[in-house]
Image: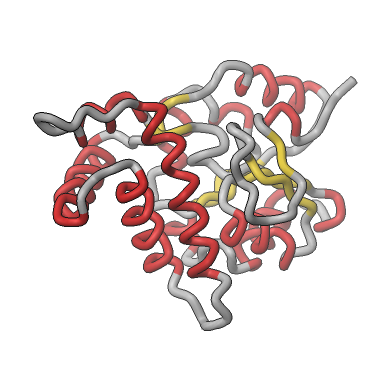
Length: 219
């Protein structure tokens, strides 16, 4: 099982750097990408604060902290958020599929594994998976907007398990946000690995991988 954004397909940081740059403040893609770790730390703190969290509010906290860490002033963050959402509605911003991703999925399919996407999204994940040539590898694609339940609620993982016809102990999951993906999978009894491309997710102690090809090695 795989998350979609930040796991199979990544933000177009080059495009966002151009969109969020201003006269006298030129952003670059790597700055934005590394600053996103600050956003992940924020959403983890929010989701794990001991109160009943609202996952949508968590994503808002993530976005604000991320852009602030990239050097965008507070007064511009709302404008940037509106621009982000407009572009995302027109054509998803999680559009960059890293080298080796399709090959890793192909190896798993050839080895006989059942594959699923389990994503918090707005109803577009299946279409995006087709657009990027990934859908053919998956037996089922679970979009939180479609099924009506979102990670970290373990019920979304149970939907995937039921569709695949496997027990929790037979499944593995990869995702990029600890409090959303790892804790949700754990609550469903699924072994999970945290995507950490730049080895900077250092505020939690959890097994990490850099690429989906490392989730399940096939000799």
